[in-house]
Length: 363
Ligand code: PEP
Ligand code: MN
Image 1 (cartoon, rainbow, N blue to C red):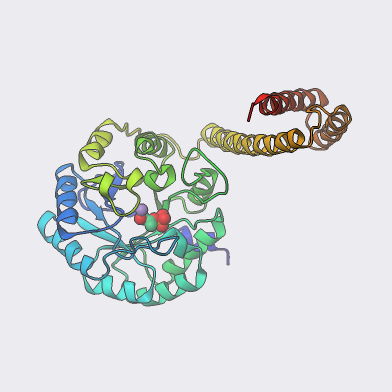
Image 2: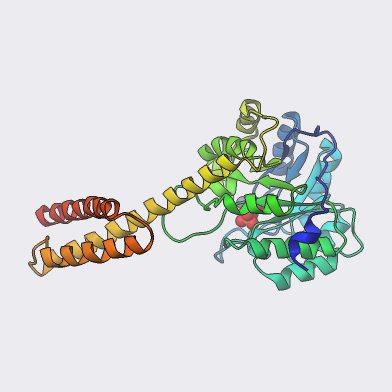
C-alpha cells in the first residue's frame, strides 16, 4: 500500500485559541538555555498571542563540541511555562528515552527533527515508544535531504503508531554550495506532500530555511500565501547571545511586529497551478545561479593556471569545440541552437573577462 493512501485520513491539527483559517504559530528559542531565558521568552510570546511554545532541550548538532542542550532539566522549565502562561509546549525528541521523558513531563507536542526523519530506524523506534499515547501531537520535520518518500515514510510510521494529531513541518533541505538561504526550500516537495495528504496540517519553519533573521518575515508571508497552515519560528529574548542558531532568531517584540504585518489571505487554493509553476521557476533560477557561480570559480582557477604557465587566455580551438558540443547537447534537450549559442557566448565572455582581470593583477 502506498504511504499516501493512509495519510489521506489525517485531520487538521487544532490548537485551542487558534481560530480556524488562522495560522498556527509555534514560537520559542532554538534551545532552552536557562530557566530565566525560557520564561522571559515564553511570557513575551504569550503576551503577543502565541499559543504554542517551542524549545529544544536535546539538540542534534551537526558538529561535536557545540551546545547540545540542557537535557532533562529543560522538561521542568517547559512544564513551568505551561503552568505560568497556559501555552502548549513543544520539544524535539530523537530517541526512545526522549519520548518517554517528554511524555512523563506532560509535553503537549513532540517534534521530530530533520536529522532524525532521515533515519527510518530511529523513526520506527520513536513510533514504537509512542504506541498507546494517541493524545500527544507530533510534528515531523522534513528530512535534511530532499526526499519526499523519507518524509512520507516517517509520517506514516508515526500515524501507524496511533498518532492522529500529526502535522508536517517544512524546514528546507541541506544542499552543497553557497545559496541565498541556509536550507534550500524546494517548495515543490511540500506542495507534493499537500497533494498527497490534503487535510494534514503543514507548517513552515522560515527560521531554518532562511538562516538569517531578516528572511523570517518574507518567508513567512510567502509560506502563508502558498497555503501553509502555520509557522514555526525561532524566537529568543536575547538572540545575539543565543547558544545555537543565533543569526536566525528574532526577539519576541520583532516576532509580534511580524505577526501583525503578515497578511492572512483566504481562499488561495494551494493547488493554484500558476503559483506552483512559478515556484518551480524560482527553484530553477536559484539552481542556475549556483551552478554559474561554481563555473566561474572553476574558470578563475583555470585563469590562475594559465597565468602561472604563461598561456593565452583565449584558446580559440577549445572555444570552438565547447560551442559545438554544447549546441549539440542543447539540441538533444530541446533547446534551440541560437539560444544555447547566445547563453554560452555570454558565459564565455564573462569567463574571459575574469581571467583577463586575473592576468592583469600585479601580484
Ligand atoms: C530546531 O528546530 O531547532 C532544529 C534542530 O531543527 P531542524 O531539525 O529543522 O534542523
Ligand atoms: Mn534551531
